[in-house]
Length: 272
Figure 1 (spheres, rainbow, N blue to C red):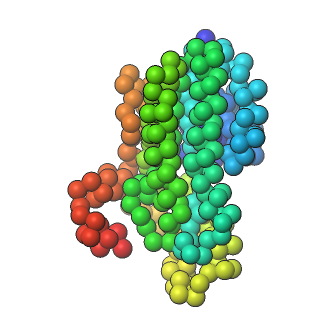
Figure 2 (cartoon, rainbow, N blue to C red; figure 1 turned 60 degrees about the horizontal axis):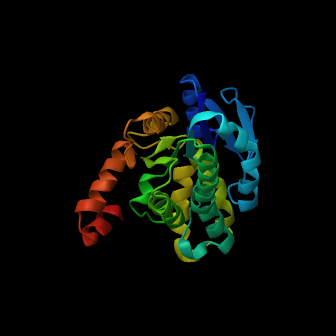
């Protein structure tokens, strides 16, 4: 029997690197993404839209035999994107998709995997890739910050909800700061519809944001690689006693320090 890694958002970036790393470690890898790309490191690719509970439930049929034959299952809830823009400029559908991608879908997928693991007596570890922005709010990124914060709370609540499960071994969060992937490209694309309905009072901030997300814009100091984050995911998967949280990049350590030890009134000045 081999260990099974189920990785969402596997077509690029952190998910892609996680597939490569887990495959190198001998896992059977199932890559999950909206549009499968023929990933060489994956043993199997399956299409999955995390905004659809129906699709997630439908995945159970494809995963049942895989989980039945696995020594252990590692679910990596990695899929995500940044819906930036002033909160008052976002449509209901933008809010809905942001939370469906980061919160509703991943928890539903974890629940489906746990149900199958319990049926077959297979151990399960759930690892969610969150963000430093789940800890600290930022202007013009509120929906993403809120969704990632909710992702943290939902996964940790899932752990408490399922206390007593014979299969659920752990639920861990991986919190990176800036990572060199195509995240900014996708965030800029998601921003375009917002610009068409933007409030005039926010236009200067939107110009600054477009410049920061534009192709060729410089990355912040201490920006991690997708491989750096994938290594933390693997650490959570293989640790004898997995931690509830794994931090990546200095920005995340600073963010956690600020939220834990700095008064809120001072935080607003620091984070402005």
